[in-house]
Image (cartoon, rainbow, N blue to C red; front, side, top):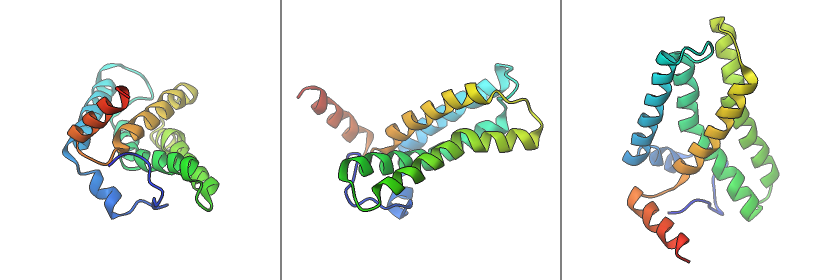
Length: 151
């Protein structure tokens, strides 16, 4: 349970992938994707379509918790090569929040509002990663949160 781990795996492992199948994580991912798809079909923003919503939303769900784990555990435990782990995690975050956006819109021929997209996407990436990083049930997370704020 909890967030950071002194024995974290540098690459996502089976335990990490199992965590992504927790019902509360899948439910929050579905809600987030619903909002992204609604926005893609109703807001009329030139660089926001269904395809980029699926690409960036899916990559965020798969990779953001891992990025947050590497950064947080690296800073907290300072294992050997911790700084390289952080560079890797930040590079992956930039790939998801910016590079995938540029590749997709270049191939699709869509307009790009890269600066505005990056600011929003990188923030959502790390917020979602922090939420989905928790290893435990939603009930456990709520209990631990209550304990933390009452200390």
